[in-house]
Amino acid sequence: MNRVREYRKKQGLSQFALAERIGVARQTINLIENDKYNPSLNLCIDLAKTLGTDLNTLFWDVTAIETKETSD
Image (cartoon, rainbow, N blue to C red; front, side, top):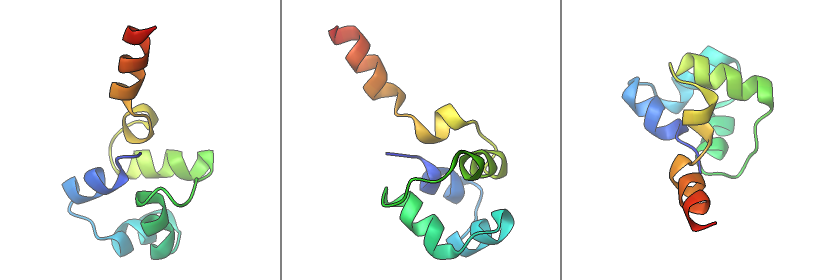
């Protein structure tokens, strides 16, 4: 799970507008948002910068990690 859609909407961007800003096709954004495409590290960094957040927040499910740590 990632938060690309959530952060894109917070910025008021369409998939097309976000794609244009980072130089990819709109379909790429759609696939990333639907967890059907694993973007490269460089693309992840570009997404995070453009959306005004960091990689941890955008791509890692902190609650799942915390749940696993507390159950260990």
